[in-house]
Length: 171
Image: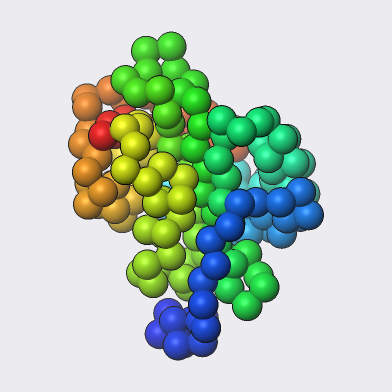
């Protein structure tokens, strides 16, 4: 879909906590977001192994981890178009107590301000850190605009049977 057309039909973006009934929709949107965001970072064969059903199962697990975990959905006209999540740091050498785990949005809704709303819901202006693909310039610029800086830490993350090189950002 043309981005301008997507923007023109948005009546209102609602950012709200995810709900148990969202798991199937979140799984479908998550899978589509990964296809759109990672198609240049990993092979087509790896992406073909991605299952919306498996992603829905992961969401069912994630949304039942307790109040320290924050997950939000962006909803337009009753449909989930993106999501964000943060929680306790997962790394032993974490530079902050809170980690931004993910922000993903359907490509047609990028550059509409929705990503910023999802970011604000997940961590606001809290001190936090995150890992991002070193090849994802769009995301890196977004995080830099929000006060994050690369701190020099890097690692290789297994992803759908392949690997993605990631850098750590801290604020």
